[in-house]
Length: 180
Ligand code: VGL
Ligand code: ZN
Image 1 (tube, protein in one colour):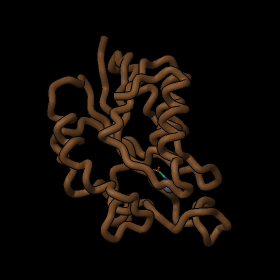
Image 2: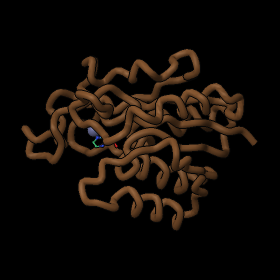
Image 3: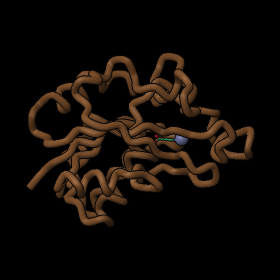
Image 4: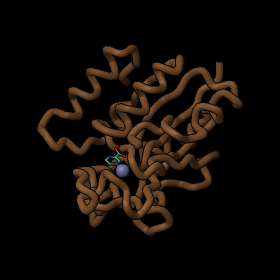
């Protein structure tokens, strides 16, 4: 049994104040994320980055729903400075294909291979945003056969519609994950 912590998209653009697509209270979970990453409970700690090309289809300018965010190599796409880089073993970039949302960290990335190469069978998903990338990453992890836990104190959501995050967590739980 080997366990990985996956910190989803804890980047400048997803954090207040000032992030291009700031998730309410995203910044308050940095201490919890660092505690988890340093706890010794995980054999592998992975931070994912939303890493979009400049003309990604999800951006308003291309007819999408989101303001431009996490453009490759921009400051907004960097991991948030409050996240301890020394506690992270690998960074996995996602969302690089121009024509798909790329919410799941398993989509078009090396995440699955990386986890399997390290013998991981259990993952804990944390980070941003509960109702998009955390949700899709957790659901894909279940489909891939991993045992999945979501630490509900270490995630925050966008909540475009009130209750979206609550519904996302319920969907993740119903699909077979453990909620902490
Ligand atoms: C995300 C919206 C757009 C996320 C990424 O990380 O949850 N949300 N791109
Ligand atoms: Zn994105």
